[in-house]
Image 1 (cartoon, rainbow, N blue to C red):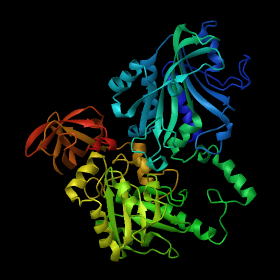
Image 2: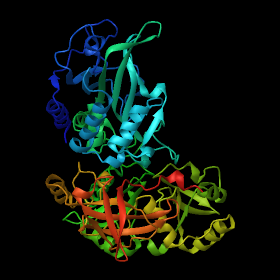
Image 3: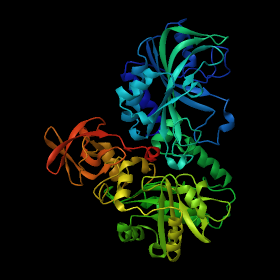
Image 4: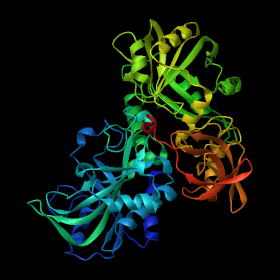
Length: 578
């Protein structure tokens, strides 16, 4: 959706919920508390204080705002702006916490169509009511609800006095590649992983000059969401400046300065043309946005056929200006290589390094410390953030080390010359590392909600059906995009879900999923989870049976076993530490 479409969708949605839609008030406020209007609720303060009667108990606006208190951050973060538009819905003595939260969740997931699994919330640490609404009424897992203090989840007043109260915020998980690498990273962390999109303020108090909080005559709701931040999330952009409303301006400035957007300032001109051709070619064959990747960055995505089916899932690492590394599933190596060669220009050199190299994945809570012990020099692999890669010297050998946690546990993947792999492995064993079989790896990846190609993904399954659209950049063109877009427009018929069985009996691939005695889906992966002490599985079910909390049955050895649709991952990563 374009920014203009999002603005209209928001106002239309709240108009349908009996809100009076008002035009933006002036950027110059009528009161003298601030120089500019800095929040959507500011022009409505008299209604919250009860000194004026609102034209209707429910109001929605898209307010032009200006803020200078964090102007030093503009251009240095993905989200800060000085002038912006704030979407807001307001209630004056009408609905309160439950209504505000319900409206927000419905708009974000059903209108803006943001993936539910990427939405987290924070609540004021003492606000048990908001916490329970999110968990019990909305169904959000407890691990995605964070309690924070007054610094993070208390809003207002504008200036020194006026309406204020506790708030709850909706955060968008931008991906581990934007995070700090801390396995316990969550909203409240200062890293760039969490995008605060929508603040729902429960206006309950009128703050006096001495700091005293007096109850408001009619508690109300004041919400604010940056339109540009929402657009960045919906459009899959790295920053607000890459959204459709800003990027044409950025491009025009770049043309005036003869500068290529997104490139390092210190680059020479020799490789610019080759670089542009290469990234354009790669963007055509994979679903992730390659052209915006920085050196050392790793992204996960898919090769798709013209029908949108997944040929393979893979990671792409940018090793240099004109050098990329694709790591594919071993069983799909020949198929992937042939597909890439067929669709890449002849000028692009494609080399299969499989038999020249070996990969050793070291996973688990102590992985970073152990690999650091083998590293030569001052720079250690533990300096890598999630979804980053770099070259390090281990035992005198240059190795490429990445931190993607592709097995479901934090750790690193060491790519070294094949002839020294045994020496590296023996050194790791000497530090206490033990080999792990495919069965153990399968448990870890399934607990983490990760798909395995050939089981949960195949050429007849699209990213939309697999609920993995967060790894698809729909704002660019790629093979299969038109088919996926048509599928999204028409609505998917089936969807990948997580199943928690109320038994230790394991549901294997091919087990039928039942509802009311009728077959509604099939299991693609299943294991017994030792950490949860129960069986878990992934399955594709009819979309009407894909809602979290729905009760179904799974045929295990011919016997129906009760199960529940649950969110994934089944188990947050830090919980695996024994």
